[in-house]
Image (cartoon, rainbow, N blue to C red; front, side, top):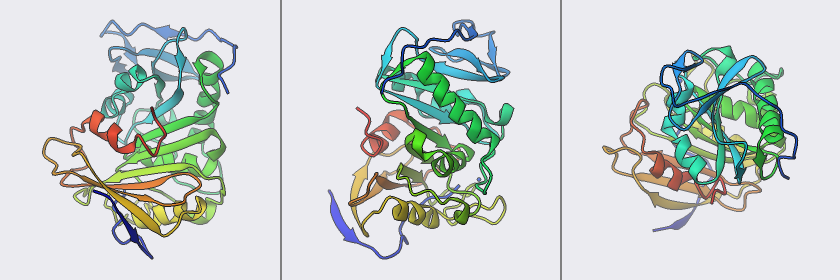
Length: 293
């Protein structure tokens, strides 16, 4: 059931946090993934992936240079976290089967950190992600020249930093349990980027109201910032969506109207920060706002 509801402020928003690819092909060091003893950034490589080194960092890649892809998705891990974990949360193999090249990079040369606090300087991780997007389009056959960023927890923080610092390279971001960090005044972009934020009021690790430690903004303030950038109306459409864990009672999504690029916020009922997320249910929720087929 759907309804259109006018709002003045985002008091019901929940969420907070802890043209072608071209023909140029460049040889990269691949590590075969069918050997579980083989490591990528000190972790076992999941089935269906390879380990690729770019600019001195190892990345999990779910894809093949011999295939043609609808788009590029980067999944960003939490802190502490690692590439295979976030690839599992969003099910990178499922996304690759749906026609998307998926890369899970490593934050800041480690398995636990991103330079995700937005300020006037472009972070090292932003430079790396920008180069990684260019690398992917130079070495794989991908429709378009942009990327979608899927971040969990600290990876969600980083997704918002990227939306501020390299919006011209992004189709959109999905942030699960992670919002904006830093100074909104340092995020002066006027470039609209699709936003879908998923969060639970039950999340005590990364509260929806934000926290002073880590300079983490509230979800309300985070979304208000992009509602302005994306030129959205004050009305939103509310939709019921599936539960994202086996113990959750469901999800309610607000999608704002008349945006230059979509802005949506999903409330996950009774979902702790660390959960066994159902990737196929998450996909149903963010699919439309990310324009995925």
